[in-house]
Amino acid sequence: MSQPSKGFHPITRAFAYVGAFICAFFSLTIFISSLFAFTDFFNLLANFGMTILTSMLAWAFWYAGKAGKNPFIVRPFSSPE
Image (cartoon, rainbow, N blue to C red; front, side, top):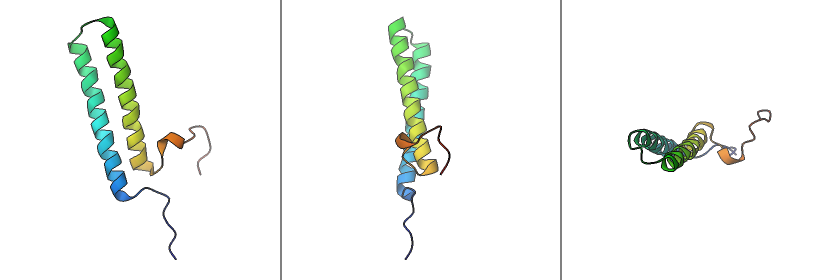
């Protein structure tokens, strides 16, 4: 019998890459629009916070597509399996 793979299904990986692209696009768009449409300081801080959070979500999608693992359960300072 063949062993089931530990990675994600190829369609799931494709959707993870699409999600990474969309989140990175929104992150870049929010960052650029906050630089040109300056209203007040608190709005600027909120937009930069959204940029950081959206880029972290883009990284999570990209890691899920690349490594085939759930990025939210990865221990960053442990030895590789």
